[in-house]
Length: 439
Image 1 (cartoon, rainbow, N blue to C red):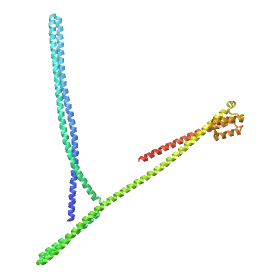
Image 2 (cartoon, one colour):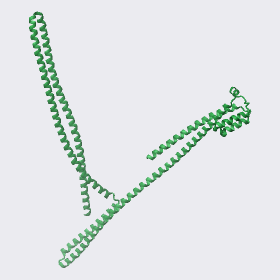
Image 3 (cartoon, rainbow, N blue to C red):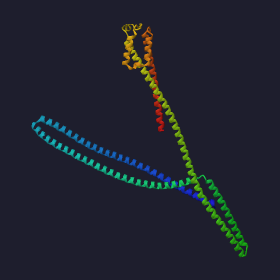
Image 4 (tube, helix red, strand yellow):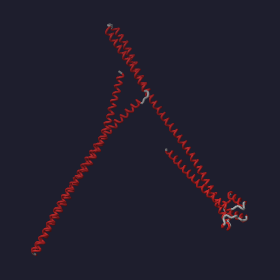
């Protein structure tokens, strides 16, 4: 009996849910249908307006063409009449002068009348044309105003219907959401197995109690039928009633225990959901910390790489500067050597020098005073070797220095290329760092 009542309650709830869902779907379908009908009404109104305008324009054009044809016919008749009068005038002028004058005067009078009639007809046609155009305009504006009023009234009715349907849909949607949340809360519970087992146990106990109650009732009926002593029957009935009251009290206590267990289960479900949420938040925080650590490690690696690149670039730039200084010193030394050349050496470059030591030393001291860059050990060592070896060909050494100068140029170009490569790698690392920071 208890299971049947539970099933009936579940079936009734399912039917109510099905009805609510069905009503919400019907409202959605009606709203979409109304929107489509509204769009069709707009399209049909647009087509009707265009057709009405095209029909009116055709009627106007047909009337105007008819008026133009009438005007052309009148003009043709006038020209034919004019040509006939001119022929008559020419013939009569040749035959007789008096008659010519009479006909001429009559023809002039007739022409004036014809012109007046022609102008009058033209004026009347113009007035009729203007009246018809004004009538057509007024009819068009009146029809347009009527169509606009009907269209606005139709839109108002449609909007009111849509608002009512949307309100109903919103109401049913809220109720459906509440019911869904309740069902979710009841379904997402992971302790449903325990609840079901408790319900089954309670159903079994209630069935046993109902069985005992029915058996006792049958036993009482039998005794009432067979026994004739009323006192004994009353005593037995009282005992049975006491037992029944005890059973009822037990059933009430069991029902109260079931309610308390349900409350406890709901609390346990709430605690369980909170624990799951805390665990999920903790896992997300761990993932975030792990990703942050990876990002920091990569950032440090890239920072170290950039530092290495910067150090190498600074070392390369310092090497370039030192090589440039050496090249400048060498050039200054060669300028000094050109000053020491004699006219014979200028004419014969690869001859032996016969210079004395004293004037060269004087010139060297002057050059040192004028140019502070000549105090380098490199130039002094070269100068000492030159004075030690007097028979040494100075211009052979000059050629060697030129070769060294060209080699230094090549070294400079190589170092510049390395510096460019290092700058490019540094730009790449910086761009990768910016991308990682954005990520």
